[in-house]
Amino acid sequence: MFVDNNPFYIIAKKFDETGCIAYKCKNMNEARSVPNTLEAIRAEGVQIVILDNPEIYSEYAPYQYVENLREFMNQAGNLNLVV
Image 1 (cartoon, one colour):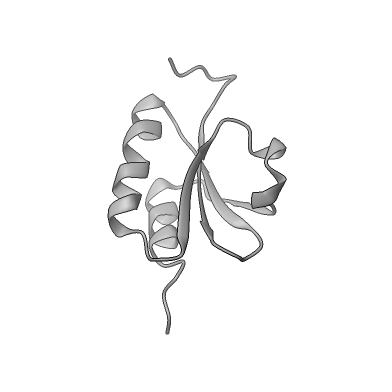
Image 2 (cartoon, rainbow, N blue to C red):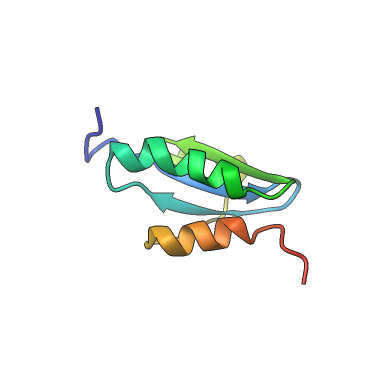
């Protein structure tokens, strides 16, 4: 059960690079469905992880929090984009 004082965060990180982008899920439905959607658009070399408390996972820091789900998905989908 999703509880406001125990939120879930979805993070997207490029392997072997410092930092990640993070999105705080609004409800349990997002926590369940967003990672599957991201997995479908995930580029090679990008890791998608669900965390309950980002502050205890220093290996992903620094966190760049994205408030809008659509923007988070766009950024996550473009993490390994070569221009």
